[in-house]
Image (cartoon, rainbow, N blue to C red; front, top):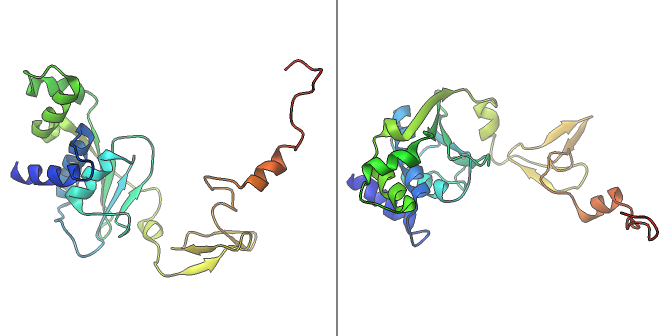
Amino acid sequence: MKELRVLLAASSSRHSHLCPRQVLGVRAALVGIESLGLEVPRRDKRLLIIAETDGCFVDGIEAASQATVGHRTLRVEDYGKIAATFVDTLTGKAIRVAPRQDIRHKAWYYTPDEVDPYAAQLAGYQVMPENELFFLQDVELKTAIEVILSTPGIRTDCDCCGEEIINQREVIRNGLTLCRTCAGYGYYRTISQLEAVIPADSSPHPHRRP
C-alpha cells in the first residue's frame, strides 16, 4: 500500500490532482508487470506496454512502469479503451489488462460513506482486490514484436513527398518507398490534396434548392 501511495503521488504530480483513471493506470501496470514476472525500473527494453487510450490512464502506467514513448517502451494505440497490453519482448508473452465492467458499482462497497460517485471510484479503486478490479487475458500480437520494435537508426526517404522515414516505417509499393501518409494510411491530407478532390466552385447553384 505504501508503494501504491508513492506511485499515485508521482502520477498526480503531473496533473496537480489525482483521478480514478490514474489509479487504474498505476494498478494495471503493477498487475501486468507482475504477471509477466518482470521487475521495474528496467535498464533494458524487455518490457513493452501498448496502451489503448491516452490521457490520465497512461500517466498512471508511466508512473508505475517508468516506460515512456521516448524510450520506445510505451506505445499508444488509441482505441478509446481503458486497457493496456504488457509484453515481454524476450519471450513474446503478452497479457492484456482491462477493468471489469462493474467496477464503478463495486467501488461503493469499499467506500460506503462516500456519496459522490467520483470520490467513491477514486478511493475504491485504490483498495479493491486486483481480481475484482481487472480482467486479464493472454493475447497474441497480430504484428511481430520485431516489426513493432523495428531497428532504430535506419533512415530512408519517401519517393513521393521526399520526407525522411525512420524506424523502418516505410511502405514498399510497386517498387517505390513510401511514407505511410503517401501510401494512403496517414491521419491527414494536405490542403492541396483536398482542393484536388473538391472543385473550387463547389457552392450550391443559386437557383437550386439545397
